[in-house]
Figure (cartoon, rainbow, N blue to C red):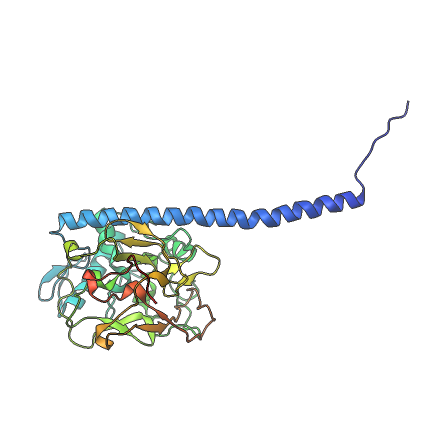
Length: 346
């Protein structure tokens, strides 16, 4: 008795391989998009947790928004027992920044001692450390890191890898085309492990008018003080926010929920934003009110985005001089201003 068996022909195998390949090509982007969407949801949840902690901080600190509190003329004791008396509130904040990092990491002496960030404004990128300390978060926590911010995760997990040969920004010199405003300093590089994907708006730590820190044209990453700044560490009050559902408190520096990570200033960017009422949204930056810096006149403040080393490049590539709005970073009216409303802005 003869049994007939039928196998697959070469053509049928090739067809099956093509079909499977097409299915994979369709599925991989869908899985990637789904993973990014889940991470975006996780980022929003983190910001909501941060907002709740910020409100608790205000309740425990006479309605003050979290910020540096050490003051000019006061004497403070550092973790190594030495006393420091600052010559300005900005100087005091740099000592407080160093004290928090030393105390929470134990890096008080030796090769990896946390150095003082002299000449740098700690409010710009490290205001969140005050809230981390208040929350008793481990200084290795990823609460302040966007799940799509893979590089910051690596830096957080490797806090001692900041010398030449590492992937920390500017550890290996200043690359052509990137911001070159002194980011290669030792005390700058060693702080990247404690940075955040989310930035606090300047209105939360400085006055709405008078002598203030303001942006400078050549880089969006540094601020300047044209006059002697009035006390920064006095602290703003939560009740000073008149339009708390329309005013941004913290925001992602980049829209990382897309293939090309966009700087928040691009109109099409949809970064996660924590509002002062505790809500979180990812409304397009282009829907926000134009950024205004009164010191430069009442007009729409724009500047080119210049990336830091290891940070996403501009849409037009390195050297792109296209100016973008700073939107909710610099708000006309300060804490009483509005970023998003029921109407649109050109």
